[in-house]
Length: 246
Figure (tube, helix red, strand yellow):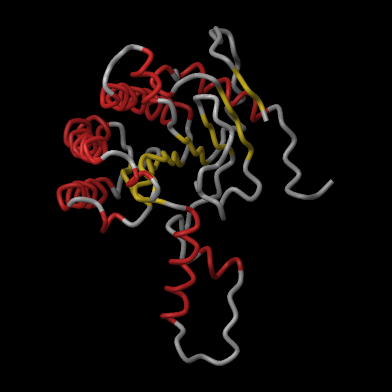
């Protein structure tokens, strides 16, 4: 596990033949970024959206196939109501404002999590964006919304049991369960990036991260740059992944 501080990486050289297929990012530090500037937390979330714009473009340029952004967890409902409302409004604003640019760059807009608990306007914009970009050929941007790793596994098992109700000798395997998760058909994350100095998974892709590499940084998410993403990928490329073998 690396703990990287922001630094000049203008000369770094990425192996374009070893780009992670799937990158997960726990977008952390928006609130602290705003607090350090004596601004409301909502300003930090708005600044974080600007970072999303840059990182998606860079992932597309590098050839990353899937980018999963932890945007709102099942635990985030515990935050103050005004902050939750601001986040939901920011989601709708982002999808409306950025759709043309994302679509032009062939980004596939997807979501994982139980969006039925989100405000109706959020559900409508997400479903519309997903439907209108499903044929694009660029990076798949998974927005993890009302997402929790434990809830995903439980929901997947329950849906499996519902589909196979009454069958004798019922048995679930890893392959079967993976077909009932939100990430069905996607590769597991090669690397999960968490800025802001925290070093925990926070209920993010618990099943999928069994052999994922982790990269931590003290940088707050609004300050995270394309160079930081490149450095994370360089560090990933310098690791030896054995998946439990020798």
